[in-house]
Length: 221
Ligand code: E4P
Image (cartoon, rainbow, N blue to C red):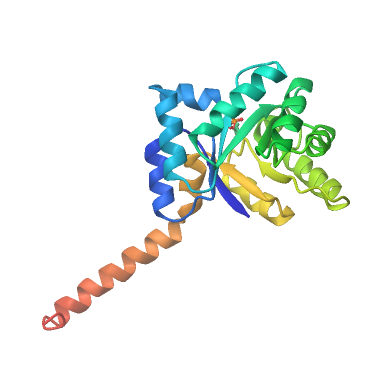
């Protein structure tokens, strides 16, 4: 399963990229707003740091505006995936951009039917928002299971990009289902790295090594 980072925060992107963990990035207008500053500079830097796919979202609501924006966004790099909303205009833009060889991520997917339609429009990725479904009292992970099953019956090349991830258990469940990608807020990736037994185990190893050194002062000689 590929791991994308769901952020426009350059520090986090560099930190996890240096660990070799990142296959790509997803951004959206809210994430750009959260970071402040010049979004154009941020998009240019993100696409240069990350070799894998970087989703940059359009803000037009009509298909021709989305297509034009999509073409501009691709100027940031060959790894740019144009993110369009799951609307009739979004699908029209998806079909047009995809047929020009520009990959598209259809975002704000909340039902299996929406994922099916986005796949038929030629999307490279569909982004079901599982955390927001959980928040609304629906089982977000069940949607991933449904989409996975539906896609398995057909010849779609569309990848399931699990979005709106809230905690590490979401990641385990998505991997067990066989989702293609999860996009993670930096905080979730931080939590996945840590386990209290790893911390305690390392502390004990180092403390024992110090004791051993005290008993054998020549050990490092
Ligand atoms: C996906 O690409 C979105 O940027 C993101 O996962 C939305 O997550 P949220 O529900 O935490 O805002």
